[in-house]
Amino acid sequence: MRVLMLAPPGGGKGTQGIRLAEHLGVEHVSSGDLLRAAVAERTPLGLQVETYMNAGELAPDALVTEAIRPILKTRDDYVLDGFPRRLAQAEGVDFDAVVFLDVPHDVVKERLLARGRADDTPDVIENRLREYDDDTHPLIDHYQDKGVLLRVDGDRPPDEIAAELREKL
Image 1 (cartoon, rainbow, N blue to C red):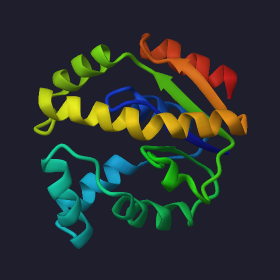
Image 2 (cartoon, rainbow, N blue to C red):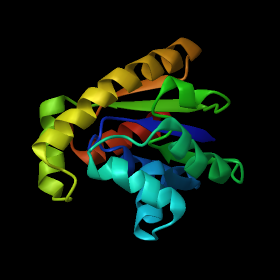
Image 3 (tube, rainbow, N blue to C red):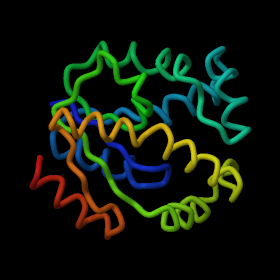
Image 4 (cartoon, one colour):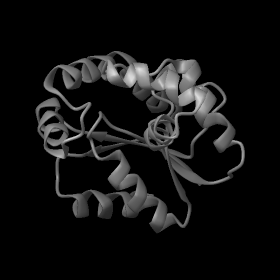
C-alpha cells in the first residue's frame, strides 16, 4: 500500500505517518528528513537545499524530486510525507490513499514555535504557511478528484487521529 500524508508544516504528518507505517508494516519516508540529512551531510544537494531552508523557503521542485524519486523507485509500499508538495511533483506518483490532516494555522504556529528548531521563527513560519496554502490546495483537490483523499481533523490528540487512520485504512 502506498499512502501519502499531507498536512501543513507542523501538522502532524511525520508523527502520524510513522504510526501508520508501523501499523501497515511498511516504511515511513519523510522528504523533510531526507533533505535535512543531505544538508547535515553537506552533500551537493544538501548545500543547495540549505540556502532555501535558511531563508525559510521551500526547496524548488527539481531539488526535492532529485532527492525523493530515486528512493521511491526502490520501494513498493510506503507511507510518504512531504512529497509531492505541489501538483507539478505529483506526476507519475500514484497512491492508494492520501491522508490530509486538516490543522488550523494558529495551531500549527504554536506547534512549530514550541519545537524550537532554528528555522522555526514567526516570519519563517508565516512564509511557509503562505507557500503551503498556494502549493498544496491544488494537490488536495487533485487527490479528491481521484477519489483517494481522506480528510482528517488533525487538531486532536495524536492517539485519536491514529485510531481513525487505522480504522479507515
